[in-house]
Length: 74
Image (cartoon, rainbow, N blue to C red):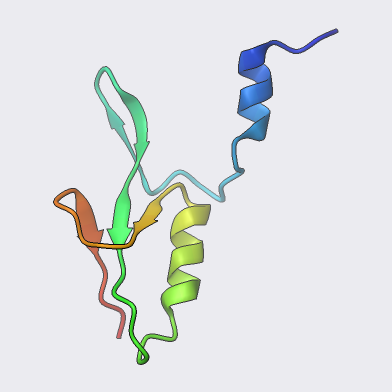
């Protein structure tokens, strides 16, 4: 049996560990939360944090936006 376009698209979506970094908005539906993590030489956790955010449904942006959460790792 041939799969429909919707089912095929659902299979192509990345598989997340969870959806903890998503928000449910009326009329729009589920959207990812966005995070800004400043890059610096003293920030060895950048790649680890970016990976965790992406695996759990969030997005990491290159510059701080009004709708993004800024994270300053110690």
